Length: 246
Image (tube, rainbow, N blue to C red; front, side, top):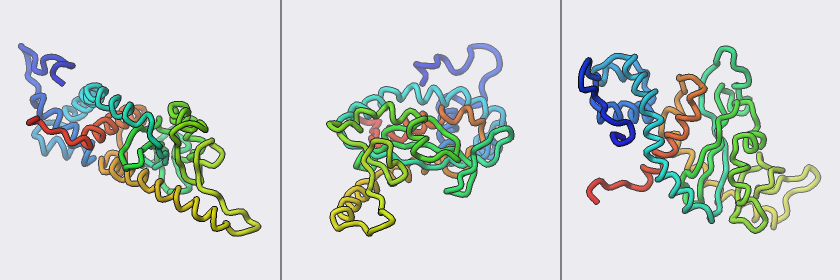
């Protein structure tokens, strides 16, 4: 972080309220716990505007510092079967922003498409879409369909999804026809798909342990994409089990 942003404290003039180490802790604590900025200011002995400035300044730098870690994880998964699934990041109602209410989840938020591998490890996030958008449409418009088109090819590693992605060109369970029950072979096929898809739900469960994506996003929606990239990089970094003594 220091190598990217340079000296944190100016040689002259007023000093920053917190050193670089504690400023990074403030950002990580906010992403992990999603406390209000006023609460964080009291916990860390500074003002709410200071917390806001640190979030604005350091969140993109954290993501930039972990770009190599994220790229290495993406290369490792290039030939692996992947799973795509969507989840809602609650935002509440926003003035002058339509389409946030999700009838499926009965809440206002944004639809985020998550990609995971078969071990339940998070691989990628798509761009945030309106919460009212169906997963099949969000899959195409969020950039996930384009980035992982090779996985969905007949000779590709494979891309799995639930029944909401029927017609998107990826592997999905068989829908039950109205005029007959599923055959034993179709039931067996669906069970195999769903057993593997459970890893994607586990990856999302790990992602929303960063409470900024679970208990209500309060910052401007234009910053949510940046927050998603930062959380993705941090989750990949956390999963690798970094040992500072190696």
